[in-house]
Image (cartoon, rainbow, N blue to C red; front, side, top):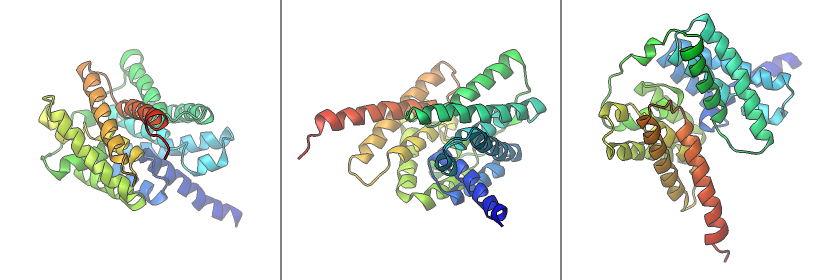
Length: 291
């Protein structure tokens, strides 16, 4: 009887790990994310499930904090690794081996920063994916995925903003973006609305720098903004300012990286969030005086 009750709990933990990709500790949100991923690509969906299982099991085997595991904190970076690698490379044996090893490594890195109480968000996923990209391009060549060269029908309107949600998890389809938006909305409505506005803002800022229209409409300058907005969303009057600042920083960093053809992943989000958190800390400490 105890084993039966543990199985659903473990599934909820895995789904929360997927939901935590957008900072949502909600198993239903994670389920919606998986639906959106599978809609875009079956190999990427399989990669997400495999990697979140590997990441969570790594945390359990290494006896990390039980509550942190239940919250899905050791699943989201691993899950992103599992989605990213089938996106960049054909689903051959080497890719799946890298998914397993990479998700475990991302979990270990995540634990290091959690113990140090350093908010790194998706940095473990970024570091692991950069490493695998280098190995598979320079050391042990693996065929490039056809997803990189596939084309998606696009149009400039709400779809561009919705795709900002989709691109957080490497999905260019409008359906996936809408499902991801709903996934965030059912758990944190204000975060979803802020994120939608930030995705629009990211696209508008990108147009000021003559970025190709197709790139903008695919949500490639919206997804880092979406994550920034989710971090800073709230009911305080200043929250909108922090969302605006973080989004602006994220777009600026993304523009800089694209100029040098650097693989961005979610690094603009992480860097922009660090910068904004630093500004927020000092403004509250030295500028805003207690009444």
